[in-house]
Image (cartoon, rainbow, N blue to C red; front, side, top):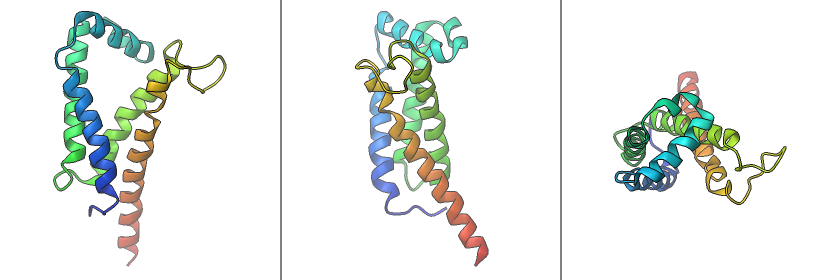
Amino acid sequence: MATKAWHFPVRLATGAFILNSGLGKQDVDPERAKRLQTMAAHAFPQLGDMEPERFVKLLSNSEIALGSALVAIPVVPPFLAGLGLLGFSASLNQMYLKAPGLRREGSVRPTEQGTAIAKDVWMTSIGAALVLDSLFTRKRRRRR
């Protein structure tokens, strides 16, 4: 699958953002690790059984890997980068929907505390755009 010019800015910006987030979690204090794990466990209860430090290490490494894949434009095809971004952002969206205090009562609109996570919906859009563009470009090529 060929990389298109519009892939560069969205992949670089998103990848750099996620990579920075992962690097920032490399050395977190136990209190912050517990907060991150507790928030994630609202959406994915099985994470509640994991040690907070181990969870944050896994999260950090995952963010570093995804961020690196997004910025490695000539190496990682748009379809795979988009799938990775969709999976990651879907988990953030799930956390936003499940964690208490992030949404207004009976609404999907964020509270002030929820805005920091609700804004991650843009990553879902970028991931979907990369995947859909790859799928529709392949179909057009097959028809010719």
